[in-house]
Amino acid sequence: MIRIIFVFFAVLLTITPAFAVAGSSQAGDSVLPSADVAAFSNRVQQDLAARGAQVAIVARMGRDPSQLPDGVTYTHVGFWVYSQITLADGTTGQGYRVYNLYQRADAPTRSDLIQDSPADFFAGAHRLDAGIIIPDPRLQRKLLAVIASPTYAALHNPNYSVLANPATRQFQNCTEHTLNVLMASIYGTQDINQIKADIGAHFTPQTIPVNGLKRSLATIASAALTTVDHGPVVATATFGTIARFMQASQLTAEVYRLTPERAVRF
Image 1 (cartoon, rainbow, N blue to C red):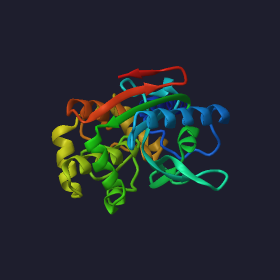
Image 2 (tube, one colour; image 1 turned 45 degrees about the vertical axis):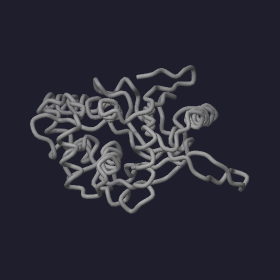
Image 3 (cartoon, one colour; image 1 turned 120 degrees about the horizontal axis):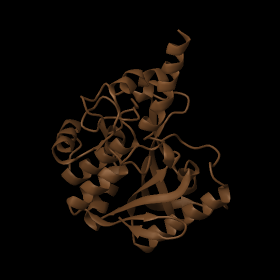
C-alpha cells in the first residue's frame, strides 16, 4: 500500500511540467527585483512607442522556463494599448495600459478581465523576456475598436482551464480570450459560435504531450487542469501559435522577442 501511495504522488509531481502553460495569475510582489522589472517594462513601452504601436500582443514568462512543455515559450499574454495614463505624481501622460485575463488566485477555476500597468504585467515574470506581436495598422484599428466595445467583455468566459481547447466554449484561458478578440476583429463578428468555427477552420493550436495517466490524475492536483474539453489530443492556444497564424495570414507588422540585452525577430 505504501508503495502504491508513493507511486501515486510521484506521478502527481510529474504532472506539473506538462501542464505548466498558463502562468496567468495576477502578480502581487515581483518575482524578480522590482527595479529590474520597472526598467524592463519601461523598455518594452519605449520600444513599442518607437515602432508606432497603438496596440500590441505582448507575452511574458510567467513560470520557470524549465517547467514548460516543448513548443511553449511564454505563459501569459495581454493586449498593450497606447492610452492616456495617470502618472505617480497625479499628472497625465501617454503610455500603455495592459488588458489581461487573469486566473483568480483564490479560485483557480475562475478568471477576470483586469487592466493593469506594464510593471504589474511583468511583476509575474520569472525571466525578463517578452514576446511581441505588432499587428499591421489596419488590424490595429480593428482591435482597438473591439477592445473599446462591449464585445471585448462579452468574449470572456470566466470558467478557467490551464489547457483550454480554443475551438470550444467550455473553458478559457488568457491566450484563448486573446484569440477570440483577434478573430472578432479580423472577421468583423461578435458571434461566438462563428468565432469558434473560424478558429476551428483556420487556427492550429499547440499540441501538449500529456499521457492518459497524467490526464486522469490532473484534476486531483488542480481542478484548473481539466482536459474534458479535448478529444484524444490535448492542444491549446499559445503566443507562438497566435504569432504563426498571424504571420501566415499576413496580419503582422512585426513579431519579435525583447530581452534587456536585445531584440530578435521571430
